[in-house]
Image (cartoon, rainbow, N blue to C red):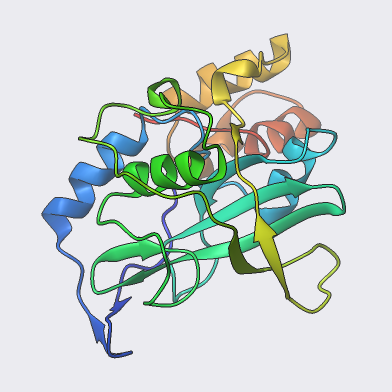
Length: 215
């Protein structure tokens, strides 16, 4: 699984510090149980996955930026938007260090956002593994910098996040399941070229669209 550069994380004063490898490893293991976490898919793949979904549907993926570890993709009435999940002083947030919601655990952070955007929902445990007690939050609008498609300028937008796009909702095709099985056995993609297969099949096996394997 490809992970964005972990060389540094922003602190409250704008400085950078090294993350704790042990706590980060524990968090990655926790993320594998979160159906809304889609690993290292690209922004374009996230857009395809979210296309046609109801507003408020979201997923979390690895960031392509060296300045953040994770990114957030989110469906609205106006299209699909993306924003980075920042980490200041060891706390994940959308926006800056003074964000209304911020926690040291990414699953708990997502849990808090859902609870904040959905005040009528008292139990959001179906979205997340158990990560501790829920924070008591008052319902209030969240505004963050979202990045629309087609490389247009970022815009400040109110976030209404309610529905996780779950990995287990997607049933792969037969050829997709075969690719998954082969790629699970052959982790070194350079060895795919040695397989006695036509060139087009090798190209398909090398493709990573919608390919997620947590092992």
